[in-house]
Length: 331
Ligand code: KG4
Ligand code: ZN
Image (cartoon, rainbow, N blue to C red; front, side, top):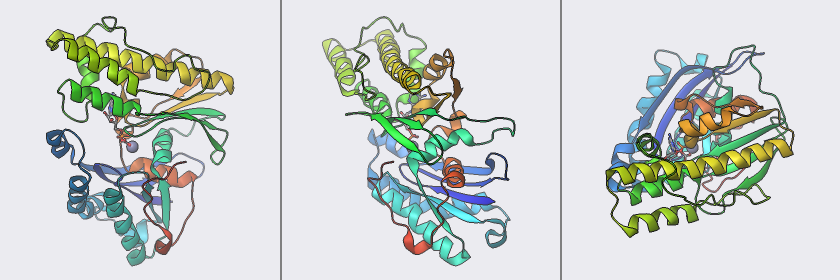
């Protein structure tokens, strides 16, 4: 089966062709992405209308590019589309395009929750001898979410905890803004952190000792703000702040994820979302016993291949009439 995936929930416009044979994992045939990140870097964050306008410009050419000279009527079996959560204007661009293509090509639509997409990025491009076993603990860490989930199977998924305020990626982006760094600041903070000493500042590890699986990152951001206000940081101070801040975030994420894995006897730990591209987080989790799955970095941040991948496992095929964008969608 071959699925065309389309993703436009935030600032990226993505399309991908992914195929899967039974038994076997989804394999990416082609994955394309057009980002409007340069525009958002100039405005210091995403202005939703700007994101949607850019997506309107690119969506058709991205779909055409991913299809190449394939005839979609013969070589695409279904269209997977992100229908939420996300920015409404952005979601509508993808959803309305997918509905139109579904109608014209007479192909079913598979509506996909973006958050499941981040989880199923782990199933992409695996070898046939690989397997991801349940129960698994999944940590979704993106710009909008920090969620810990217990996956007992593909259909039995329970939310164990979530952030009470800022998401992990949001904290990276907000701290970046305090330091005058362009959006999205996550990758840059971790790069600058390489030149810093992570033990310089003793920033808080919010909720690290709480018995639940919730998170909170706004206090950590405020602690960084207070430090920046004390005296204008010089270059080396910025490196040290980045390293100390990153260490706090990683410690909290790792501690809670491992605690959840132990509590629920998980045989696998699964990571997903843009912050899963963070090298320190990836390294820190590798030192534990459970089998660890982290997508390739290009599949951590938003992309359409992960949306197609999720569609193979959460395969509700519907008519174009039945799909609507849902910006508040949760699990
Ligand atoms: O999953 P994603 O592409 O979009 C959402 O669904 O939100 O995640 C984007 C977030 C941004 O906040 C970005 O700063 C963060 O992921 N991010 C990182 C890294 N790469 C992206 N955070 C920390 N370290 C990174 N290497
Ligand atoms: Zn995302």
